[in-house]
Length: 224
Image 1 (spheres, helix red, strand yellow):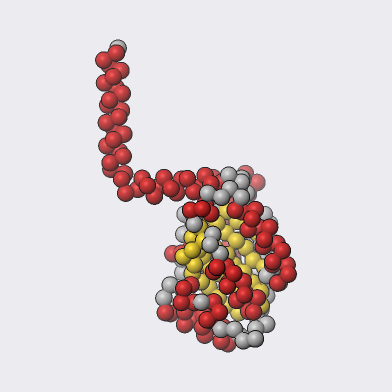
Image 2 (cartoon, rainbow, N blue to C red):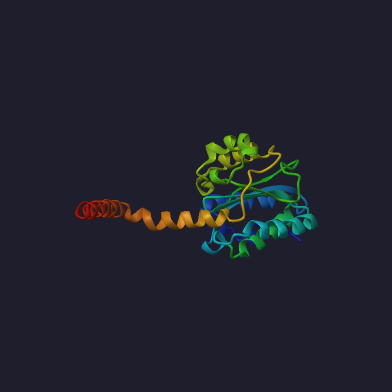
């Protein structure tokens, strides 16, 4: 079976014609059994951000699927965005991307990096999870967290291909991922929702807050 860029539905996945052409050329040159590395980024839906068990769901599914299909890599989450690096044969990577594209838990999918490789950067089929939120990191992973600081706030949609490669180089040697509690993503979703609502009305909220303080002081002085 021969696979090409149409199997990745690149018209929906890439930011511009240049990206689509690069993916098309790369895939056409590779045999189905060629080892490749693919990085995609996406945005979590609001429902996903509010699901406190989303990390466990993704991890449990990945363990089974990846072991069966020879897929390795790492999944990163932060600031409402996913970045996943997957490695395996071309035929398996293309099949997995079709499943990922159909997943309703995220949208705004883009592929910033696709390249043939001689060896894997991540050799663990369990698909490690890495959470890029400062408040979620444990004390035991402080040194790792410090090395991730240049990539925060986590906005992989805005990164260049070179930036993605630098990020992968940074995280490939991590023995353990910064930890997170189950309620963490829900907390982050609530923070993002507040920012989304408050940002366009910052001046109004400041004025209203100031007036509220004056009202409280006035009532206090009247009753004093």
